Image 1 (cartoon, rainbow, N blue to C red):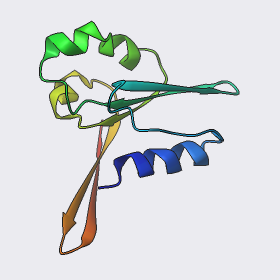
Image 2 (image 1 turned 60 degrees about the vertical axis):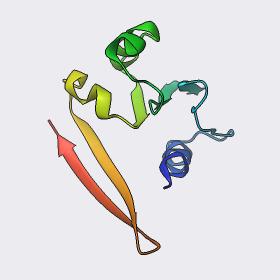
Image 3 (image 1 turned 120 degrees about the vertical axis):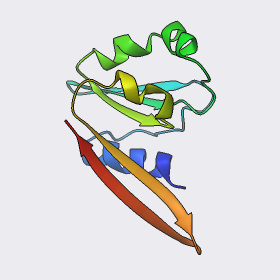
Length: 103
């Protein structure tokens, strides 16, 4: 539905010039450039909080770096800092977007 395409666009806006791939199999891709770091997660295959702990998910969140999270439903209760939730849906061959800011 465009999740990785959106991540690619955001990283390009922030100045990242290299390839951006979906983290589907890695679960997390890390992008470093200049003095910036972005973590890009795909949590589609994560089924439990224990699996999140095994990949050190909370340490990534506490790193102070931007985290882009695809399929965030399992982690929403752990997000104690401001974040944006963008929902992308397909209806009648059109994409529909809903952006909600949480404090």
